[in-house]
Each structure stands twice: as structure tokens, then as C-alpha cells.
Length: 369
Image (tube, rainbow, N blue to C red; front, side, top):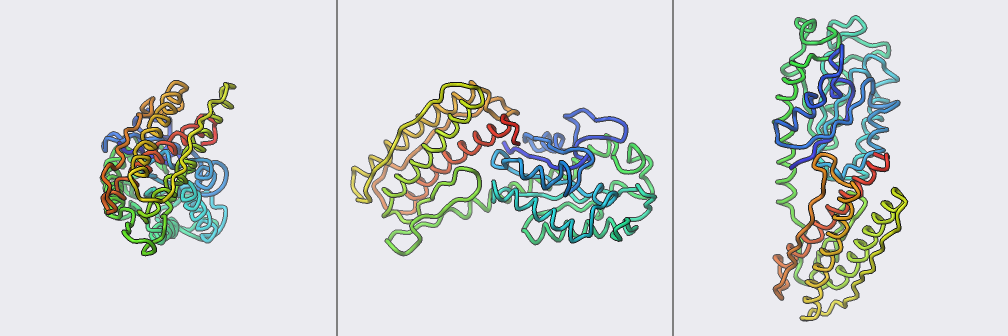
């Protein structure tokens, strides 16, 4: 089940111009309901791409490895209360994107362009603010930056729900905040687009598995997987299984001990400590292959013990209330082919994902996210 995180202003937060709509009826939550997802709505009223509680600040405080897709919805306050030129707006958007990439370079992002704002006496998307640029100018900029970074955007200008002819009934305050009915319609339009982006992202990832090699020197020894606090090396040269196993085991144990330490600090508990090492040569023999199996099974036991501990302490996905334990399936055949390498790397991906999620949940508990 995908976990959507939404960053934005009062429109995504759920203010209808008079009061907050029920939390489960906000646009992000309705999108999640339609798509069968979970959603974390971090939108804050009155915010912009830059400034206090902004896109820049929020992205710097969030661990995006705890999520699967990002919805970004800012712009109305940027236009109504501009702090600078469009070049400044571009800098804010670029910085927010970079902040997201710093913790999860692979997560898909969808930008929802702002709906029409009728404040400041505006009657057209071409009306200029006191900095000399229009709502159309800002929408074009957001779309351009999103495209430059390879992200999708949703443009309300193509088939608007809110227009100069209906804004007195589609907006609760007649100026900028959609009614509950319009929020529902916005979510209904956004949901399939986000679902398509998420599914295409997963398809692309599964179609571009880690590169493999059957002979020393024909590919890099290892391939790093970026994103998240825990970054393991995917095996790209099967003749170096021993070195890869040793290095990744050390990183995993370090991450596990970091989590135990953080929990101990958070709750003033006695710190648990894991001591598990791998020291295998690259000799391709039965001892190494058995060692791979035994080490993965030991890591499964160690990681699952950590997961159960975190569940007991409430270090969990706040939507589901728990983190599921993992089941590893290490390769058992003595072959140096792509199938062995793919299955071997898949075990590290499972471990890496759950450790990064636990670290993400911890940051929420610590108040960092």
C-alpha cells in the first residue's frame, strides 16, 4: 500500500474559507481513499514555497524515505503575498526539490499547480501582483521546473473547476478556498493522475534492475543505491560476493545500533547493542555460499527483533500502527548468473527499506519530521 505525503498551503490542509473540513475529507486523504493508499497531510495554511513553514523548510525537516510519493500544492499565497521575483520563486522550488532528493532521490513528486485566486481584486490569471508577475506566470514556472527535474504536474488551467464565472459558489469565501464539494472533485481528478505516476515509477524501477556481470572487471564492483539514511551496495560483480557481504553487514549492524541508541535516548532506556560481523574472502566455494545463506538468516532474525522492539515502543507507521517483520529468501544455488545476483541484491533491498522506514518513523517521534 502506497504512502502519500502532501505538502502545501490551506487548500490541501482543508480550510474551506470558513472552517477546517473533517481531516478525512481533505484533498490528500480523499486521494488516498480513492487509490487505496495511506496519506500523511503535512499542509499548513498560509504557507508558500519560501518563508516560514514553507516548502523549503518542511522538505528540510522530513525524511521522505518513510513515503512512496509526494504531492506538492503551493502557489496562491506566493502570488497574493509575493516576497520577490519569479527567479526567487524558482530558487525556493529548486531548493525544496533538492531537500527531497537528499533523503530519497528516487521518490516520485507531483506538483499540483495553484487554482485561481481572486484576492487583490483579481479577475484574470493574467492580473499582475505587486511584484509584476501573474498567476499564469507562476503556473508556467512551476510546470517548467517540474519538467526540468523529470517530475509530473497537474494543471487546473486545462479544465478548471474554479473560474471567474463560478468562483462565488465554488469557493467558500468567494476568493481562494474551495468548498468541500470542490475539494472532493479536485481529489477525484488528482487521484488517477497520482496513481498513474506511482505505478509508472514502480514499473520503471522493476524494469531497470541492478546491472549484473559474470566476469571480473566487466562492470563496476558495486553499485550504490541512493536515498535514505541507510545506503547499501548492490552487487554488480558476483566474484566479489564476500567483500559485498562483509561491507553491507557492517552497515546494517551500524544502522540497527543507531536505531537502538535513538530509542534509548528518546525514552531514557538502556541501549541494546548488536554484535554481528561477516568476514568472508571472495573465494567462490561452498563455504562462502553457505555463509551468505546463514548471514542473511542471522540478519533476518536481528532485524525482526528490532522491528518487534520498535513496534512495542510505538516507533511505527502512524497510519497502520505497526511495522511488519521481514522474510528473507537468500539464493541457495551455486551459480554465478544474473538470477543469483538479482536474488542476492533483493535481500539487501528488503533490509534497507525497512531500516530506512524505522529511521523515518523515529524522526517523526523525535519531532524532526
